[in-house]
Image (cartoon, rainbow, N blue to C red; front, side, top):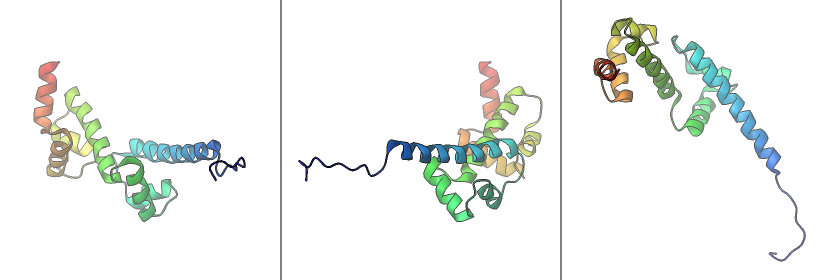
Length: 131
């Protein structure tokens, strides 16, 4: 078998590229929608429909592609934007919390500390001290 001259291509490199392009477009739609609507409540049903998947398939797909859940990703996006608002120092933390998609302050503080390894006040002091 190893010495046989007959070769048959099972799948071309072009076929794999198309699949990657399709997945890239799907993820791009998910990311674009998330970055545009992160301040609003985004249900799994809503984001799954953007990806043209069922909720179960979407959750499995997103975790496989990004190694995190969609809600973890959404929280990271919200925290990232909240960090920017904190260092601009134009709003109080509680307003920033609600402006960036969190429904209550304690939830915001808990997620912020989990993602950034510090409280919003510690983050603000650290950044303003270094600026």
